[in-house]
Amino acid sequence: MTSKAATLAISIADAVRAVPGVQRLTGGDAIEVATYYAGGKVVGVRLDETVQIHLVANRMPLPPVAADAAKAAQSVLAKAGDDRPVEVFVDDIEGV
Image (cartoon, rainbow, N blue to C red):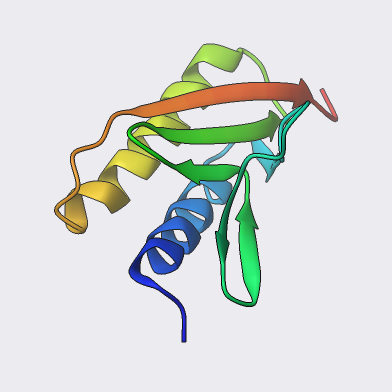
């Protein structure tokens, strides 16, 4: 059984991956960005005071991709009654 945090992180990851221009989520650079739960993890989404999203983009320009990813995450959070801010980091670009 997954926790509420895991369910939220999975929903955010699904919404962000569906955004045009998002190739995939990534674990970041030095310390892996992920939400851990018993039996698994959601790479690329960290639920803290601020929700962090780390992604690889596949189109330019990057600011609209990041903004759309943030909106997708905020929509999921709003449906859950959560008003945490969202930060999006574009860690790489592929296929451009």
